[in-house]
Length: 354
Image (cartoon, rainbow, N blue to C red):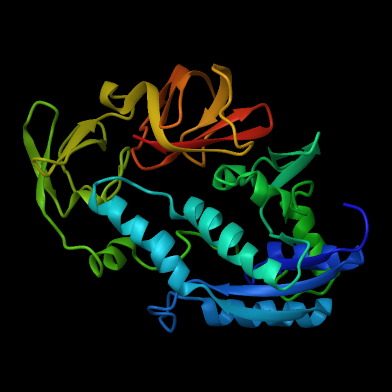
């Protein structure tokens, strides 16, 4: 990036966005910080850190020497992300709202707001890289593959990528913390946030019960033997082991499938039970980072965030759906989650698993 730019940085109150703002300021750019408030239903509860995070972001902005605004995107979040989250869970699927939050809030509502401020581009603390070649913007994995977040950014298009910067893409997390300490930023030792963006650290079931009615039913084996009772299909995900409450001898129990018409949870014993292993998947609601679908051929893919890339073949792709066949069987492929396709370090995009 050449020349001085007007860059609006999404400030979360964490160490990553703090160092992002500091680095860009050090490079001589005009930097403005924006703290996004995306949730307000219970932001005074013990589990919500909005107040603490916004104060941390303001402290960082003061030290870095930039102006900062707090902008409320709670309505957009509820309309574009949370409503989808509830709809998917009530249908028995397991959505990834962080993916949608990036596409609809951070790189749409926030990006639009930054452009109104006269920004040349926005910057975030995501661990990802961008490469520009022949006027095409390629989304790439971060140098620190243990922190790479390209999976969560796969729904970004060329317009969004062309106006976005990821200054941490070439830096390891340990170096980010070192830079924060060196700069005297109060977030240098702050713990990374975990969990779904708006739920934070609160108990998930308790949170979901406030919005969706429970619907208990039977836990059964593939042969139909009743081995327990579930509290509602929405509270379980494929491959889940903890919290099933099934006693007895033998190997651990896992969730293998959901029989939605009968409201039954299918459970099996053993991590490598055949019902947990799939050779292929289909996906819909496709989004490609280069705005065009990749050619049929050999790639790698992730069907959940915390997994190594798996060799696969893109067998078919059209406007509505795509099919992947894997070289090795894939464990607990989960409807509602995202499958993301890679060509080496380049994130090509992906879709929602059917």
